[in-house]
Amino acid sequence: MKFSSISNTVWVSALLAAGAHAAEQRPLTGEGVDDTTITFGMPAWTSTEAPTAIAEQILEEAGYTVEKKLLAQPAIFQGMQVEQIDFFMDAWLPYTEQALWQEYKSDLQKVATSYENVPLGWVVPSYVEEETIGDLAGKAEKYDGQVVTIGAGAGIVDISEQVMADEDYDLEGYELAYTSEAAMMGVLRDKMPNNEPFIITGWRPHSMFSQYDLKFLEDTEGHFNYDSVFVLSYQGIEEKYPRAYDIMSQWSISVAELEAMMAAYEDEGTSFKASAAAWIEDNRERVDQMLKQ
Image 1 (cartoon, rainbow, N blue to C red):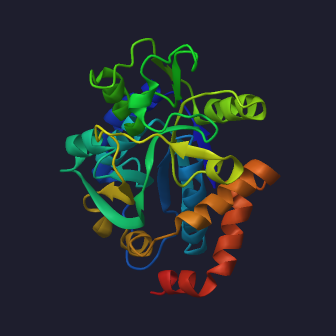
Image 2 (image 1 turned 180 degrees about the horizontal axis):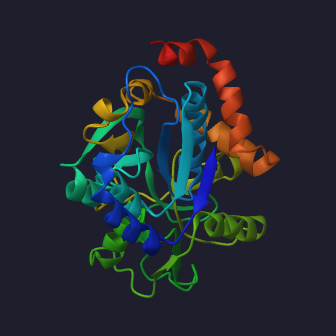
Image 3 (image 1 turned 30 degrees about the vertical axis):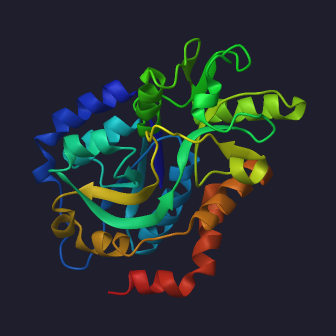
């Protein structure tokens, strides 16, 4: 397994240059997978790291070499379009990543449904009195004027920008603080022990909900919607890498299983590699069926 983190700008430029040569890549022939590399695109989100680690080990068991590229979401979609990224395990549709999907859907396909009907939105500690986003009006000072979110380009950030601009919510005095998932978790660790108020963006599955007493603020204007999460790839991967496609098309996992992996990572330092191996052992019969030729 290889793992690489590179500049999104450099990577996108490389993708565009490589796209012209995508058709020249060595295809899967027959049932053999020797010397065949499958590449996953992966943002630095635990909700993506966990399922990618499982898929990686399953495909390695099938004989593939697996590579992971740490990229922002837009770069992952671009990478799939030019067939330099083979799979993305964490696409939230039809709502959260609607803009990216609309831009690239003619070149991409949904390979499998990972899990269905999961929430996302603005999250606060249960000890604050506010229950809706509308309740935040006039209380910017209480919340330090910030809604702490992840990096720009993610679907949940795009929707949060729409919420901030919604005049019906009157969020004067607030701004989005673009950080990272790790920085958001740092806010929880800093604020929760002293019962201090804060607002972050959140989604399930995520370990934060097993670690802390949190609640979603109701979005009465309907910006945030329950989504399902899909494995994506490019059109034609079923011909290019038929065995990998067949394996991945049988993929699914429960929210509870993913949150258990994330909690083990956050609380006990259990690597996703180790928890993925444990998941495969616990689901051996199912994995064997996925690998059956």
